[in-house]
Image 1 (cartoon, rainbow, N blue to C red):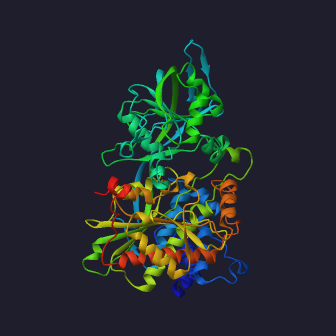
Image 2 (image 1 turned 180 degrees about the vertical axis):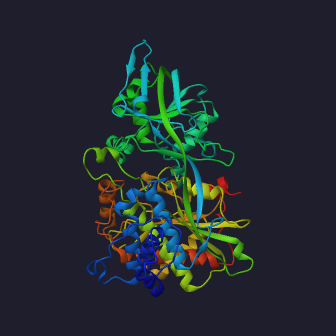
Image 3 (image 1 turned 135 degrees about the vertical axis):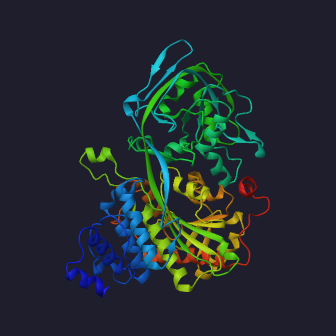
Length: 570
């Protein structure tokens, strides 16, 4: 550090070199100075003494990381943007400073090739032709929103027949199949969000997946889809939230041969219809919309599938472009000559949702800073990485991965899970950190996925050691198990765990206030009363779990008869 200061005094640093010094000085405050090849970074103000007074070193490091990642200068860290790239360079510098090794081929970055698309709003149209020939032309964003496939620049579905498929769930192993008695070939499928309540919470979350529904419909020849919402879904995601940022880009990653990874190759577009317009689709049908909706809201069993009497006209277009955005990968090599070829993967998504152009046009703050979602997760992951370095190399190798494009559909994690940078090694477990809502002194945690594998007893031992209680999922309606990056590892057969803070000790009120008033909004910034010492405790719990997995004589295994183990384990 002395040499760097001397170089500054002597005028050695110019341009990009000076920017590297700026970040080095900033990282030095965290105890992690390193010189990296990086684009220019804006200087950040030092944290005021009043902000960190009484905090431990771990809390101060986490606070500093969150402040940097969630600063307005990052412009919401949307995948593929300069703000995200700066955040990735920062995380790589932090990993290097902590003593990790580069974990991607040739460096810290695993570049993920994407196709991005922004809907052309003026091109979106949706009309319904009733059995009597009456044409009902709906209004974009007011009555519907369309998501075209990324496989083409534009699409046009001309007066296609429609068919109702209940929830669109195909689960023959549970004796349930919404596709059993309907023919969807060449048709637009109409279905309700969600799934019946015949499953346990996490299996139900799996079958809730729109991606899975589209794969099933596409395999049977469907060409388009219209999703209807249940009462519960509308309460969770009001229409105003669905259309709040209509210019938001969607993405998918590309296979090595250039193919775009899509949910269903034959599905040209999916529309979501406002509930006030949904009855149009059921004119002349054997069951009314009201009756179908009531059955879906009850969710106790099959809603039933049948042909609809209407025809659907849908058009849309995308402004598509190719781009690249990196996963940031750090490596802690294992110490055991055999077990070092097995890898425990820690993940936290680095991206957020960028800038809301509509709010900016209205003269309002449109930067979605993503402090809680997920700067806190990345910061706690880095703190867990530091604990590995301080305690010495584990027996198995550990990878610390800040993934991109979680907000676009868990894409960065999906790409890494398909193409892990581990050579001939084996991924044996994933520990995921995403959006720890740390606004209360937590006394319990929810452990998504833990009870499905031998990770469960490891997790319980860690909680006993730290005096934290285990709580059941208090919000199964959100389907959290399938909505974060760990699930992409589950789909590759890798046992995984994802901890969230529980609802005890005031947590329920804090969570719902955040979810309703700050989640995916510009107010998710560092002005929130984030408890950094509690984030440090949370980092410690995740470290203890990951360490125990990395040092255990045997790798984690799925429990006998577990649904996800049987479905995905290779």
